[in-house]
Structure formats: C-alpha cells, structure tokens
Image (tube, rainbow, N blue to C red; front, side, top):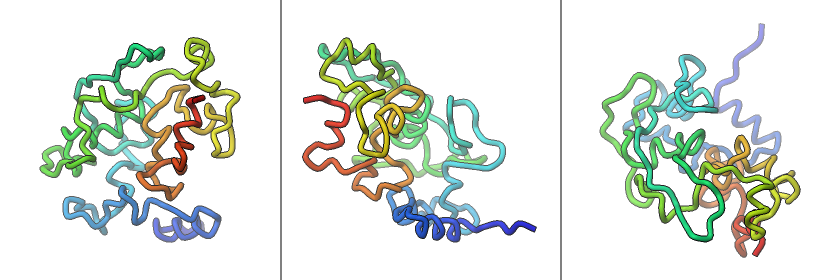
Amino acid sequence: MKKKLGLLTLLSLMSLAGFSQTIVGSAHDFSSQTWNTSVGGQICIVCHTPHNANTSVLDAPLWNHATTASTFQVYTSSSLNATVGQPDASSKLCLSCHDGTVALENFGSMSTGTHFISNTNNIASNLTNDHPVSFTYDAALVAADPGLRNPTVALSGLGGTIAANMLKGGKLQCASCHNVHNTSGQASLLVKANTASALCLTCHAK
C-alpha cells in the first residue's frame, strides 16, 4: 500500500532534493493568518484544491479561490508595441487578491470574507503604472520592437530560454517575473535576483 505524504514531509523532501526555498515562511504562507480557518491552517488550500476546482479561468491550476470581476485600466504607452488586453490566465488569478476586491478568505465555498489585501500589496484595478501583462511576446513583437530580446532564442538565466522558462502560453504574465511559491528564494518573490537590473535585462536589450 502506498503511503500518502503530508505537506510538510513533502516540502522537506523537496528541500533535500535541492529545492532549498519553498512557500513555507514566504509572503504567500497564510497558514498562521486568523482568516485562514482551514483545518490545521493549511497553506495550499487558499489557492488550490484537489477536487471541485474553479475552471472559470484559463490554465488555472486546480484553483480554489474566488476570482476577480474587475475591469482593469491597462498600461499604455506610445513606445509600446504589444497589444495589451484585460489580464487573463494566471495574472487574473494573482489579481483575485491583489486588486483588493476579493477577500483573502474567499476560497472553497466561502464568499462573504471581510479580510482584504492592503498597503502596497493592493495594486487595485488601475494598472496603468504597472508593467503590462497578458500580452503575446513572440518574434513578431521583437520585430516591431528591436529593444526586446527574441524569447525563443535569448536565455532566461533559469536553465533555458525566455519562452521556455518565463512565458505562460506564449504570454508575459505576473508569474513571468514573480515566483508565487518562492522556490527562487528571492526578495519580492522574484524568479531571480534583479541585481544590476538583471531580471529586467533578461527581456529588454538596453
């Protein structure tokens, strides 16, 4: 009979296997929050569930949290060649807490939560002063903007190309730069250190 591993046991094995950082103790570890009333203060359940997942958002990974219904003001610029629409896929999931309209504890069957993200973590629905997300980043965009590196060729510094390691379904999303599970162990949940603008310069040929 196969023995099921508890979450902490699994995370310990991940650490031994070389994953020295995890969501435990990171900004996304909600196990000790008063609003997290799950049995045992579970970590994963706030966002994920093995059963009855929310499938309303494309590519949502067994999603368990209520999603935002906000309409966002997106970034525009005369120098921007990308076509930026409403946040979709994983970026919409991030904004389902970070736009400040969905309660943190609105996961599972909960829909009447009263705890909302605050301070600088609440970026609201005005994204005009934030890096654009949910746009296609491909060779055609690079041809229109030679200040960008070709994502299918340029290395990400994460073991492969930008397209392989950072793009989600061919698009740049919040998770292109932010590692929500903290496996990178970087400040601000970045996928890699931004010393000397290294993260920015991964994509921008400046």
